[in-house]
Image (cartoon, rainbow, N blue to C red; front, side, top):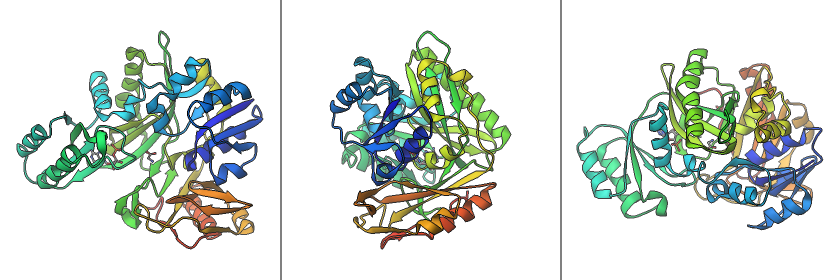
Length: 426
Ligand code: AMP
Ligand code: GLY
């Protein structure tokens, strides 16, 4: 069986590796892929632009396609593949609005009783300003762009003054373009963040199912102790020790189940992954956001713990047998710190040679997942802000972390920087 995977980051490297592990699989084509997928067993990179992906899937006899990132999902790649009679993992354009429009997602949550932060949407910036002026001056707020903004669409405002500045820049100056045409003003929630990735199989007229994976935690701030600017993710761990059984139950009851009911009621055809971005406050879960895909770098920490055939999981999502699928998890933990190019998330240098001491690396329980690096000859060179993640397995979180940081010592490039506390701070 041959599979096509769309995307080119660390998440896609992890997905490609996990797909390829299956005995059912002969080949994973990754479009465009990266230096890591180029070297992965049974994987091959392809450059496919626009409609070329459909033609390629048809001529190669691709069994199914998996979509990694949100942008093609929001643009309707799933609708196009299905129209061409091709099996594809991901939500259609309508359901992808759960991520592509925060206003749509919030309306969905309120329609189906999914617990979330209180918020109001505004498409007139004067009205938004008038509204914040009615609030207490010291109130902390979260200002969000409605549309996709590559991780830049959320601003935490410590004061009403900061909230107003954010609204002006978002809605009037349009610093994020049309993504900021409509803004959400949301109450600030205190607590610990948890990411729950899950497999979804919902089809019109049938009972749907959502199977959650082992929980993960991303570390979004650039520097140790959660200081500095937000990034795409500086490292992840799985599972999350402080996500208690009580909180997990609360998540199932107040977030997962109402989401499933909502998807069924809306008549979604959603055979893909979903990401619940949670804030946990005293065992009570609030949904901050849906992403209609797997997370990056959470996937790099979660998939090594999956004790199941990922290719078969995808087939079960497609054919409606997900409820019976034997989804199991290894005991133990994964710690996956990300090595970035210094300067990231601001400007950074590309093209550094990445030296890997393969012998020392092989002595650890770590796996290398490439995010932003390209293959030249047989060597990897940096090509992005987030460069590689090392996902190390251990019997417990402490061993996993030790293994991960030992493995990182085997890697070096001129601009290399990383957080030293992945998994040791909440
Ligand atoms: P989002 O893209 O909605 O997940 O927001 C990005 C980040 O902003 C989240 O991971 C949180 O750290 C933070 N955030 C979003 N909404 C809230 C909220 N209501 N209260 C506190 N922090 C939030
Ligand atoms: N790690 C957060 C995300 O994938 O959006």
